[in-house]
Amino acid sequence: MLSVCMATYNGAQTVARQLQSILTQLSAQDEVVIVDDHSTDQTVAVIKGLVSNSAVQVRLLINSQNQGPIKSFARALKQAQGELVFLADQDDVWFDDKVAQVVTTFQQQKADLIVHDGVVVDQDEQQIAASWNQYNHNQLPQTIGSNLLKNGYTGAMMAVSQRLLQRALPFPEKIEMHDQWLFLVARHEHMKMAVLPQPLMAYVRHGDNVTGMQRRRFTEMLQGRWRMWRAYRQLSRK
Image 1 (cartoon, rainbow, N blue to C red):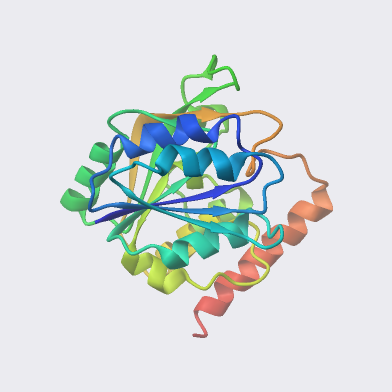
Image 2: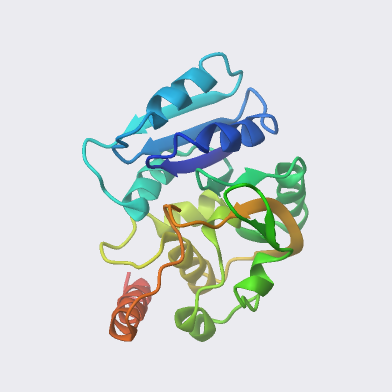
C-alpha cells in the first residue's frame, strides 16, 4: 500500500492538475491524504469534485484555522498508513513514471528515504531549468553538517518509509522544514537513503508556492538553523 500526503492552501488554480497526475499512478489499494490549511478560495470544492468518483481512497482533512505547511504536513503524515509515503505539493505535476521508479528503488534498495530530481517550470509550465538540484545548487547526498547549512532534500521530491515516519513523528515544535527533519532523523538512525538523479516531476516555482523560496534575513536563517540543530541533538537523548 502506498500513501501520498499533500498540504493545500488556496490552490484552486493548480491542485486539480497535480491530483490528476498522482491518481493515475495509484491503485485502489493506495490512498491520498490531503490536509487543507483553511483555504479561502475554492480549493476544497475542487478537490471534492475531482475525487468524488476516484477508485483511489482520498481523505480530505480541513484545518479549522491556518496552521502553516509544517503542521499541515505533520497532520497528513500522521494519518498515512502506507508502507511507502510520498510527499506532494499542490501545484506541481508528477511525471507518469514517478511512482513506479520510486517504488522500484524502495523495493530493490530497501531505502527508508528516497529523493529524486525535478524539472523546474513556471506557473505556465514553461521550463526554467532542466534540473532543480543544479538550479538550487543541491549537492546530494549530504552529511548532517552540509544539510544544516543548506537543506538539499526537497519534500515535494521525497518518499519515506513508514518506519522512518514512526521515528520522525511527532515533529518538534519549532523545526524549520519538515523535509529537512525527515532527512536528519533518517541520518541519525543510520537508515538507508537513495538519491535518484533523474527528474520525475515538474517543480513549479512562483510567488504563491506554499513551500516556496523566500529570502530571509541572515539572522533569521541562523536562528532557523540553530533550532534545527537543537532538535537534532534532542534525538540522541530520547
